[in-house]
Length: 234
Ligand SMILES: [Mg+2]
Image 1 (cartoon, rainbow, N blue to C red):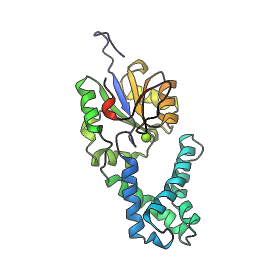
Image 2 (cartoon, rainbow, N blue to C red):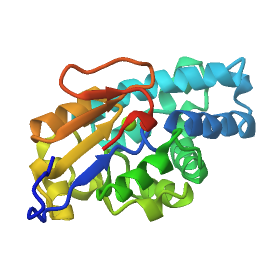
Image 3 (cartoon, rainbow, N blue to C red):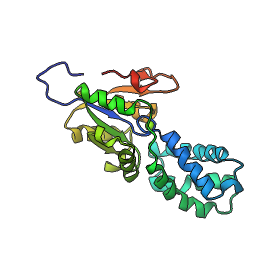
Image 4 (cartoon, protein in one colour):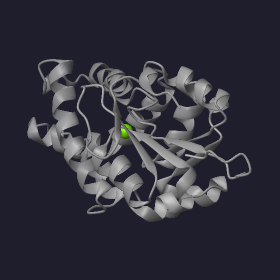
C-alpha cells in the first residue's frame, strides 16, 4: 500500500465480477428457470430446481477445466447444456444444447442482481482515492452487458477480461496486462475475488495484495478474508 505522497502511481482495486460484484448465482437461476418454463423442460426434469441443480453440476465441472486452460471456451459452451439434457435422457439434447447457450447468455445479461454492498464498496473505494477495475474470466460481450445493465458502469474505471489477451486468471500474464491497462504496478494493485484457485492464486503470484471474499465464512491463509463486502475497509 502506498504511504508516500510523492508516489503518483495510482492504487487500483481490481474486483472479480461474477459472485463478487454481480450476483451470478441468483441471476443465473432466474435465467435457467426461464428456459425451464419456456421450453417445457418438465418433460425431463420434475422441477426447475432439479434442472438447475443438474445444469450447475455440469457447468461447474466444465468451468473448472476452462479456468485451468484444459478446454476451450467453444467446447464449454457446446457441452454445458447438452450434458444435463443427455443425463436426463432428452432426445433433444443436441438441438437444445446448441440453442440454449446463446439464449441463456442473452437472458443472463439482462439480469441485474448485485451482491449486497457492491455499489457501496465501489463508492467507498473511490472516496478513499482508489481506482476500480473489473478483472474477470468471463466472456467479453456478456460481461460488458452485465456491467452496463446492472448499473455498475459508472463506478468502474477499467475492465480487463481474459478474452482481451486470451489467458485466464490465475495466469500472471493477465495481472501484468491489468497493471499496464491501468498504468499501475504490482505494488499498487489489490485483487478482491471469491475464487481462491483463480482470483487469489493469481493475485499472490503477481505480487498483488489479495482479499478473499467468502460469503460462507471460509478463509484463505495468505489473503485478507471477508464474508461481506461491507467488511472491506481500505
Ligand atoms: Mg467469481
